[in-house]
Image 1: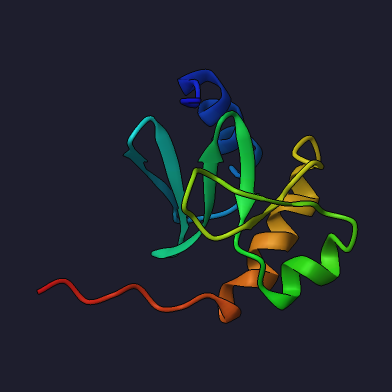
Image 2 (image 1 turned 30 degrees about the horizontal axis):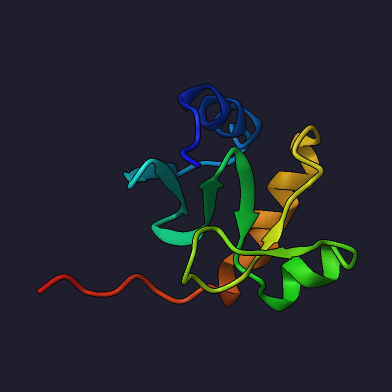
Length: 104
């Protein structure tokens, strides 16, 4: 199920406390970047993030969900209404995220 532009806009507004948030459309879904690193994305009108230690510790009850068939599981962020929580979540995740791959 493709994500709506309206839901993406809502998530981007919720992340507006952070600098350097960007996104890329990919097959009807949206990959979310923070300072150039992939943190997660909007898949089927759900905000999912990579299951790094910081995210797991901040959301111990979060469910692992597939963003799309054949993908690795990601954590469902169900507290998307709380801007401060989202800001802290992404800031704490940042150091654990892999560096972007170099383009050839």
